[in-house]
Length: 186
Image (cartoon, rainbow, N blue to C red; front, side):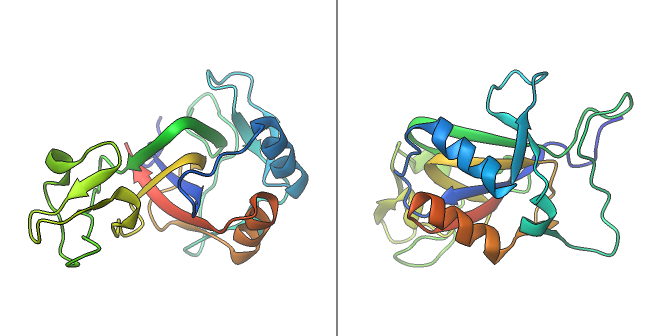
């Protein structure tokens, strides 16, 4: 049995899209020290997949009266909440394939519905005002992010959980830059 939202995740990213953790192992160690992540998940193909740490629930608040959070795979469910660290050589756009929302242009504030057709690797042309703007300046309404470094927390439906100010503060202390969050469903 699969989770109803196993393909959705909460993402955290530095506010500076070109920020990178050098080396990533130091960043991972810092996340382990904060208690956000624990040990690596050996069964995952991704070497940067981790079980949630002992402070995870201090940093992520779930909405609703009784959320059912599964932190380990079982015989009946292989979707569970774990954390992946993604670092790319160049900035990447991660956006929701399902439940997608059109981004709003920073120049005219109108929704750019066919943005995929006018997107380059770093910018989007708005068909309303004919302005080309950097991807990160668009208002993605918490359904996309653009950067080189991401923390993905899996098995979270959009707006089901929120990163707490304490987590964003600790990430800023570790990296020297503010952090943002968004949701994405594949």
